[in-house]
Every structure is written in structure tokens, then in C-alpha cells.
Image (cartoon, rainbow, N blue to C red; front, side):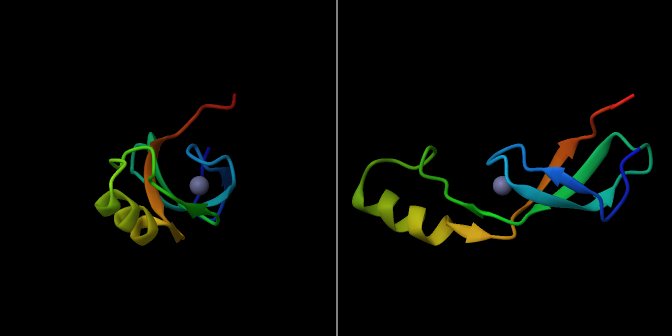
Length: 71
Ligand SMILES: [Zn+2]
């Protein structure tokens, strides 16, 4: 069972993350990653893309993920 405040692994960067919200059915959780993320894989390789890459590199991003069953 996943609970708010649990420490989990970020699915995107593999770093430390924390559960900040759990859905009522327990199947979906929101996590906040403690690491930095950059979105350079999605951005175009242009000057504009570089600009957005810099802007989007930030700490404390929140994701919705499916809760995994560990039993
Ligand atoms: Zn992360």
C-alpha cells in the first residue's frame, strides 16, 4: 500500500521522489521528484528548443503514476 509521504523512485530520472497524493482506489499516486529534470528529449534542436530546455529544467516536478503492487 502506498501512502502519502512514502519515498519512491522517480520513474523518469530514477532519483528520489516522495508520494504527495494517492487516489481513493489507491491505483494512482502523485509523486514529487527531488532531482532536476530536463526535457531535452522532447524539444527540437533549435535555438528556441535550447531556450525551452533551460526553462524546463527544474526541481520538484510532480507526476501522476500508476501505483505498483509490491505484494
Ligand atoms: Zn525525477
